[in-house]
Length: 163
Image (cartoon, rainbow, N blue to C red):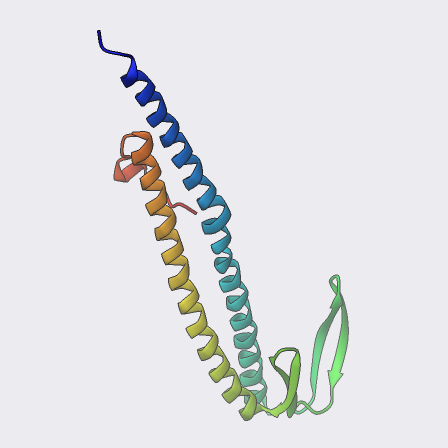
């Protein structure tokens, strides 16, 4: 009669698999999901690009009207607006970064906006590539977990995006 070594070995290997599964799950939660904060950073950069493009459209509209005076509603915060009148709109202050504003005329501002949006767009492209790599790593670890646990592979139609 053979000793019950095989059942003990089977229990040990089952415990090792469970330990490995917990390790992989912890890695996903602690490392890879935190890496996905890159997506939030990318969204913030998209918002900056949106603000610059909105300013560009406003400047182009001002150039078309050839009007020096301007009336606008200014948000004071918490959706409280006040009417403002600008006597001379030939120069504006543009946020150039790190909280610094520079006074520019319309053509300087338009050139700056084009350069800044190109720079920010290149940065978002890099962030998008980083997001794709992180999602691929998560997918790889999830597939490894599936194999460790002996789960059947899902058909393509029932798969969904990881995040």
